[in-house]
Length: 316
Ligand SMILES: [Zn+2]
Image (cartoon, rainbow, N blue to C red; front, top):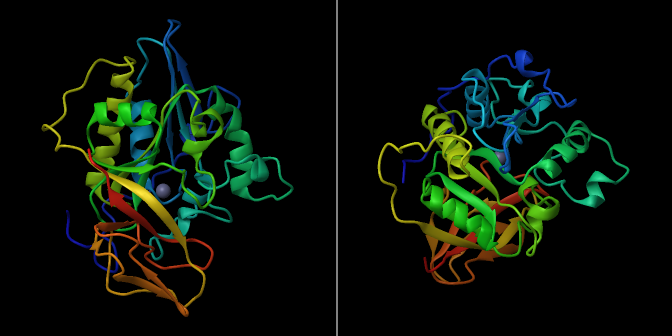
């Protein structure tokens, strides 16, 4: 595990101007598609579902700048929440995650077909056919804390198979019952159905603004394409560690402004059964089992948003 980040993050990577990528070729801004003309799967590599998660932007621009062309099948590269990304302010680099709605919680018919409007809902509605057209999806994210990178995916065997085959990162967060706090992109339509088709993975590449996160994002995008045969196999820098898989037990959503963790946390802390993890007003959040491992503790808890994910190790 890496050491905890300081209160103010090092900004090793900064946003760059994406206006050159705005005009795509499928009628949706910031979406670029390359069809090999040969049979094969249609892969979607998506960046910037959260506007301040810069590593996905680095991977997507690298694919486009290098002139990637699939040997088989079709590749689509998309930048999701460019509006939030463009609101970046280095004095508050976490704020550009979203403008109004979390773009990674609204992929349900209730939101997509509902009456509300926001920049994120408009963008999700635009991107809907792009996501629906893909056979397999890689959604590139990063974490507010500088922790070990990990996969996140619904607990379908078809997802685990691909993440385990790509191998790096070695840590997996498996969601047997989905996210539990809204519908993320990787649970949209067929990707969310137990009997559905296609793999849909999030890769959390590490701290938002670290160069190492961008390097992992680029390597993971290449490995994803290579896994399905769209590009030549790529050799990793080192053999990956054996997989370490965690199962999501509960997504805790913050209820009061008094939410506090019982001790400073960054993620991957382990709690014994009944040990206090956090208090939320009068409510105590205690570990439901021994070995309870917390992931993605909120850096600045907000009422109605995720405070922490409670997981337990799975037998690998
Ligand atoms: Zn994210």
